[in-house]
Length: 254
Image (cartoon, rainbow, N blue to C red; front, side, top):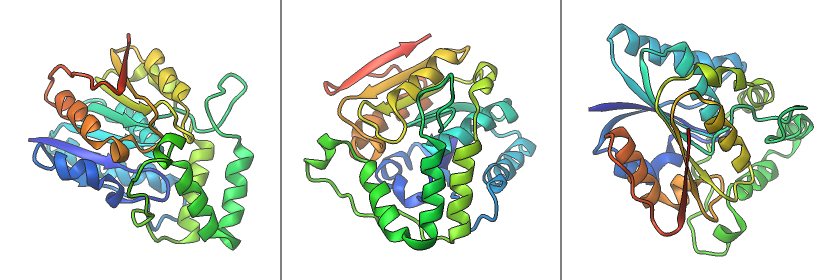
């Protein structure tokens, strides 16, 4: 059975995956990693390295599913453990979360710095605002379960460490080293990681990376478009061709 390691985004734990994993649990062995109780941003990669090192010793092959911050870690691990990681599935992906002179598909670093400061004085409002940004304007108009119960309770230091990781991580140069089959699934109206970030990944990987775009979806496509995402993921891990629903756009970037 396929071994899948799931890596969430900032501020969220295993519960955020529940709509997808409720379906996926019959197709694969699932292992969840979260970013709680961290003392520094370096612990993010070290936490995943420990899991993959154990798999490496057992000569196991692992598929990584990442979302948002988790996609940055997944890209890094694909090069660090190229013989162990055999597939990547990246939701709302980015290879660099912050803008650079030659890269417009990210956030201004100053926004992340302000978020780090707000964690000390206005954390509740910060998380509510961030959670709202996960959904597109279209999604906000339809009845969705948008409660914040999937957000994890953690320390200010740990939250800050996650934001520091997002400020520092830049894995664009690693893209050329990634040989694993990669499936990118992205919402056309993602307010956190713009679609251009996923297109950049697909266009700069040397292998056939498949980018699937869901119309009107925001930063949580596996949550708001669960059935579509599940069918794509299931087909990908079983090496089957995918069939697009009416509401989806597919672009294959060679």
